[in-house]
Amino acid sequence: MNRYIRRASVFCLVLLVALLLNAARVQVFEADGYDDNQANRRSALIRYGQPRGDILVSGEPVTGSRDSGGRLRYERTYAEGPKYAPVTGYASQIYGTTLLENAEDDVLSGTDPRLARFPLWTDISREQQPGGDVVTTVDAAVQQAAFEELGGKKGAVAAVQPRTGKILALVSTPSYDPGALAGTGQSVVSTWSRLNGSDGQPMINRALKQTYPPGSTFKVVTAAAALDHHKVTDIDADTDTPSPYTLPGTSTRLTNEAGGCANASLRRAFEISCNTVFAHLGVDVGLGGMVGTAENFGFNDPELKVPSTAARSVFDTDMDAAQVALSAIGQYDTTATPLQMAMVAAAVANDGVVKSPYLVDKLTDAHGRTVSTTRPKTLHRAMSRGTARHLKEMMTGVVTRGTGTGAAIDGATVGGKTGTAQHGVDNKGTPYAWFVSWAQKDGADDPAVAVAVVVEDAAAHRADISGGGSAAPIARAVMQAALR
Image (tube, rainbow, N blue to C red; front, top):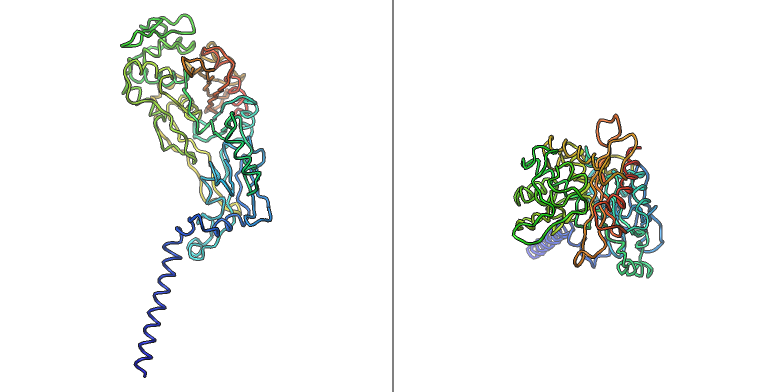
């Protein structure tokens, strides 16, 4: 009889061990899979069962949480939602998260192990911490100036601090209120449908996620390539460039809006934006040299994150000479985000060095304890220090006596470059007006800000001057806010 009891006991012990091992497998090794399963409502109930952490601008929260009393209890709220939507994104019980709400979701929702005082115990117990906060690099005054100046126009502004890469402003208009997407009611579904069906496409983040032909603002890159590859050694010497200029291997003649471009010096061609001179220089530098310089500025980088992923700005790597000529003036297949063009201006202001742009200064727990800090880092050297010095001179000339005089600021040195990118069939579409610039307060050690502005619905002539007329005043207001 004892023998049968012993066998039964051993069998029961084996079953118990198997049960414990299976429980460990489910709870430890397969927990993430169950957590991420769409049929598992528990994670959603936990996520929305407590207030979400906040996103801060200039030390003040621009987000909040509201107790709805429902099963997914806490809904996201936004202070001045349309103004900060390109920074925060939205957090929706139905449609998920975007931008910072997505990139820093673990901190904001309280699931990041760094928020715990005792991370190992929290991993074992799976205890959820109160949501942490995301402290951004955005300057409230700079963001406000960009949002106000764009007004009802369709366009975008990106502003960065050249020496560090801190993003001071990201604005996209028309915008939307992300708070209208929080919750689970029918109104959320209706709002989502209306926003996505709007002709103005308010949910597109034009500053970070949309690319445009950069037009003549790309001539900053072409000038850097020509100087670094020694195709120009004296910016005041005449260039051997006819006007009009026949594109290599074609009968197409490239013309200029401005007069006096025949054999113009690099300085003069930059100030009045001669297409012929820069197309010719692009051909002289060649495809390899142009691609290398563009990529040093950040073009063709699919991994740029701020921490949200930016759209890839493109400079084609397979072109004939005529296509290189057009690309050198920001046309053909060349496209860029406003953030990328702000990086171009920042590289000039920062002695040729491109800093990696970033939007999050630090992450803190619910008690204000810092759990992570972003340190500035160099992305590339875009050009030599000497080339950057020449470009500073030329960009300053654009503002003092060229096409960008609308960006001048008393008490500061301002450099800029206008641009108008034509598009549509036979270039009949309304041109995109561009302006890229930087500003340094008199007596300051470093430039305060670099800015890129694009206006899609600019009522302007198809000339580079339109960038100065439509976009430069917006950039001026943004730079003034940063200088203050």
